[in-house]
Image 1 (cartoon, rainbow, N blue to C red):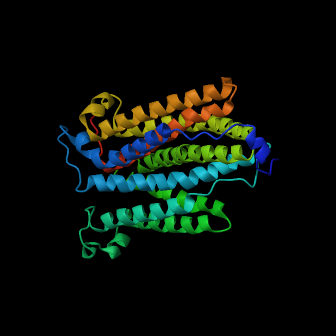
Image 2 (image 1 turned 45 degrees about the vertical axis):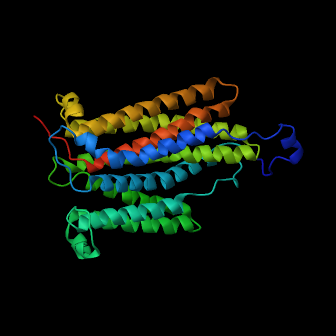
Image 3 (image 1 turned 45 degrees about the horizontal axis):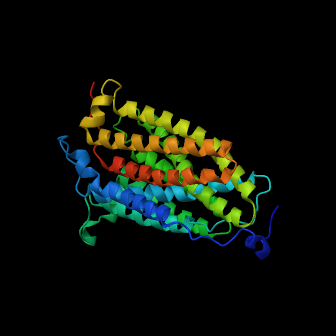
Amino acid sequence: MNSTPPTAEAAGTRGPARRPAAGPAVALLVLVALAALIPLLGPRPALDGTGEAAAPGVGGIALLRTVLFAALCVPAGELFAARLAHRVPGAPSLVAPRSWAPYAAAAGFVAALGLASVVATGNLLPHHLSDVDVGGLYRTRDGKLALLEVNAFAVAGLCALSRRPAAQIWPLAVVAVAEALRAHPPPEQDPLIGSGLTLVHVTCAALWAGGLPHVLRMLRAWGAWGAAEAGAALLGRYARVAAVLFAVITATGVGSTLRRMPSGTVLDQLTSTSYGRALLAKLLLVAAVAVLALLARLRLRRSADRLGAGVPARGEVAALGLVVAASGLLTALPLPIRWS
């Protein structure tokens, strides 16, 4: 176990420090900006020509849902990556990047509070505080679920700041269950089946999308302490688990799609409905993520510099951010017409 940073003499043999290239940072900023714009600008082109009407403020609602999903992914991914790291031989156990979980919980709390205010005004954007009927939240199923998410993020934030941050898993699980129930109201055919599929889908997606950024941050921290081999082993371990997560995400996603779009109408609705168009965009982004993940895995196996796999992995992180944004948009658009 390596517990001391590289000495000055060892660092000196590596030559002068190079200034990091600005290109990757600029590209990352552009992708982050695009991720923020997808839920805001996505509703209009998605609805264009479909004859469907969206609820007022759909762009703002989509943005709030994107923030909520991201706030769920970050702490779940940190817990997942930390568990993987404990099983890596030779890993510096006391070296870990600073947790983003408290900030994610705060962002999730604000987003959940904003979504609860929308539910409290009859699924309309409130313009004044007097428009919000807080007491009404307790009288509806959606209102209770919205309050549950607000409280869950508050508890998750307290757990993240406590001596036992692993306790976050319970309030985060509550958020995932609430989202699964919200997406499938009782009037839907077999809502519990739909909620079950969504719960598994959301859980695996949160671990996949949230785990990779923290793994890459741990690689950088471990590399500074001379534990590059342990970092490469961690990335390889994550890649193996991510392959299983991707398979489960694909299976549950296909199942959910076929429940809302019968197999004979899927191709038509992918281009003729706003939900289908947003789903198609998400599928293309997921395909891009899969390609980047495959490149990272091939480089991890074949390259002499195993940490070189971090380059496509960083691109995978950016693409996963766009997937989260597309998911936020998807939940705000009208559900597809179930043609028989």
